Image (tube, rainbow, N blue to C red; front, side, top):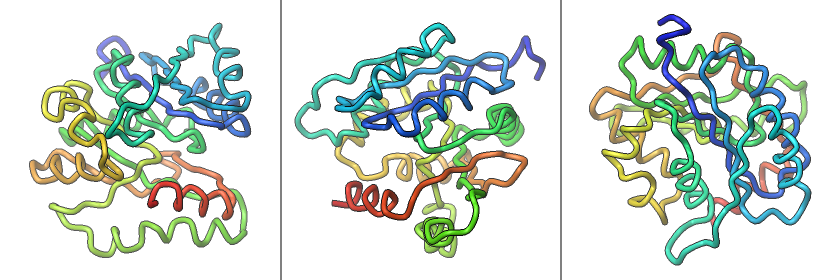
Length: 228
């Protein structure tokens, strides 16, 4: 595709108490070379300075969305993803964790792969390139069994960075409403799309440029919160 015919992409970032990484995340997204981009960040009741940091990027086109009170029956992150979906207008939506880092060419690569493979959804396993410490070795192991037993009806998926056609998510799945209490909704969406041959999973390298940094203690706290 050319710059003029490129599909629009909404980068949607849920955030809660992320002041330690918020500025770096948005700075990297804003460095993207993709020509048709909107950036939306939903602040989910942060008690630190996250909200102010998001708003400080307003002059650079970052949209701030204030999270609504959590309705009964919803998991917090799923409700935040639904709020982002409702605010987005892009042909594709890239859901991104705050501690995930993109290279300037990442979004262009994801869109190129989606179009070339007629994929309605792509997710990328981020790489660790921040030196040697415990978290660099152990963090990727959470995907070990998913990769070992990868099959079409149960594909591996990553919540760190996943791209999906907006209309597909709205029309086929009614957004996240069917997954409001489902752990890792992106995994269930990936499985259904994989069955139709419209899902791709990639292990990131320099071509994709998806990476993340997270200390081992923070990784454990996140895992406990998500699982329990």
